[in-house]
Image (cartoon, rainbow, N blue to C red; front, side, top):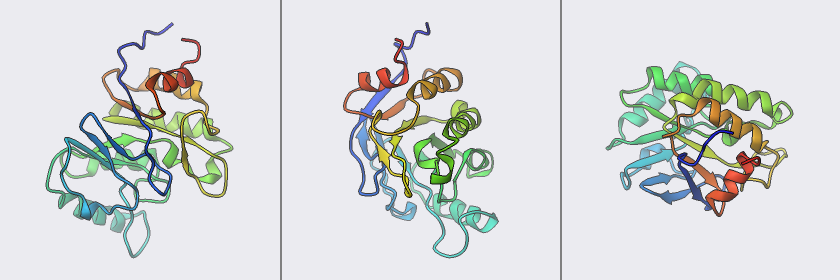
Length: 201
């Protein structure tokens, strides 16, 4: 049995009106999805924000990436991490890697599997989760774990109140995420998250 006692699990229970995790803990602030990158202010050591999408044109392709480069380049501090969303510029694992490899110097990501799932992906969610962690687990500076409810629109839920497979996510964390990488969980207590991820412990 793996020893996970030294893995950092931080509990955050707030959610934005859109349903995704928000709030602040240990110098990390999660920004709601309706806050544009251009409006961000440096308030903590690490800020995790959604990339958004251009007001005109598609949310993918060279124009969208150029837009994101320009907006992030205006951020006045360090420590900005972007989390993926299936309707925004960083919609999937390959897009997150593209940002890491070709974004401005110091670009970082927070792996957020729940918000990267589209409704059409839920039936094959296990496969999509595996790909996300295989692509991004080792290179993410933070992991954000939320559950999701099945429906026409994906919205975040506390762990254990949706349809995501906790034990599979736990195995993927063990396999792909370095022990020193903080894991932010949508739960009232870190032990609730540990029981969801590793029920055999």
